[in-house]
Amino acid sequence: MTDAGDADLRLVDMTLRDGMHAVDHQFTPDQMRDVARALNDAEMDVIEMSHGDGMGGSSINYGFAAASTGEYLDAVAPEVTESDLSVLMLPGIGTVEHIELAASKGADICRIATHVTEADISEEHFEYVVDHGMEAAGLLMLSHMAPPETVLEQAKLMEEYGAEAVYVMDSAGAMLPNDVEERVSLLSEELSIDVGFHAHNNLGLAIGNTLTALDAGAVTIDGCLRGLGAGSGNAQMEVLVGTLKKAGYDVNPDFFGVMDAAEDTLLPMLTEDTMPELDNDSLILGYAGVYSSFLRHTRRASERYGVDPREVLIELGEMEVVGGQEDLITDVASRLAEERGGDGAATAEGDD
Image 1 (cartoon, helix red, strand yellow):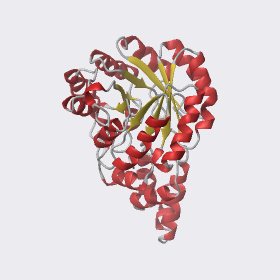
Image 2: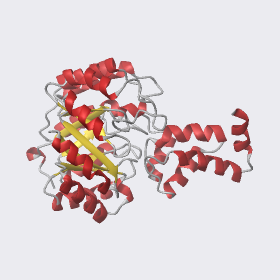
Image 3: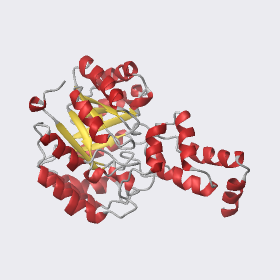
Image 4: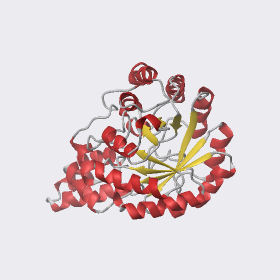
């Protein structure tokens, strides 16, 4: 178990990246600038920004952002003077040109995310990040879908490619504490680089699972102000900072400063619809083990076809869908409607 007093922790705030899912990627450059300034003033270790699905994610498939990656970087980078600036890259969505852009605009870190069994597609991207002088980190999304031994195999590939840290990503908020402990402890024992953990709150376990990850050897962890993020959100950063301080961890961000960033800067930008909530739909996401960004699309498709979104999400979980397969949501909703007599499908066709 980690000694809290000796832990050298790194906190990554993703309000301006994972939080983009909650606002349909509509943060403006000015809003991003204001949040980044508040987080920088609070001495956050790392501030991550990009489209919710990473650089290049602004598209019809993943949702158009309010501005381009370059415009967001121009707004945020000058404000990040005390913190490190991070961007997210998903191979197949972002390109090496986005890596070049981020490096030229002053990004310090590029985190490269793949499905938990697909680390081998990231080798070229790690090489570009390292060649452009940025720190590289690897994220293994939907880590609950693979046994610990497979997670380790994939993490070792990222370590070989140049990652300085590898994250266990609970992308669907589906992990129980023992799931977290098994994966993080194995990586901590077997890797020579840092191990991180990224929580979602779909089962109400984001803070608890993060503490479990720290006990198991994680030294870099993610969170968002107000817990803003896909589904029912991420570990709530101001709660996380306070909890860690209370537990005796030596954390860099200023507790009151992070609280003020959440309350005074971010909160006025949010509406009732964009605040994370552990409702029935997001609970089912965690129960079914489905990626959190599927939630809004599932709600829309289910309403269109007149079916229960919980049934759609459970079936998607049984299919072990991953990010990039959102097109299957409509297929499942349509088929469920047809199996129940076709009324939902007929209504959808009439609406068109």
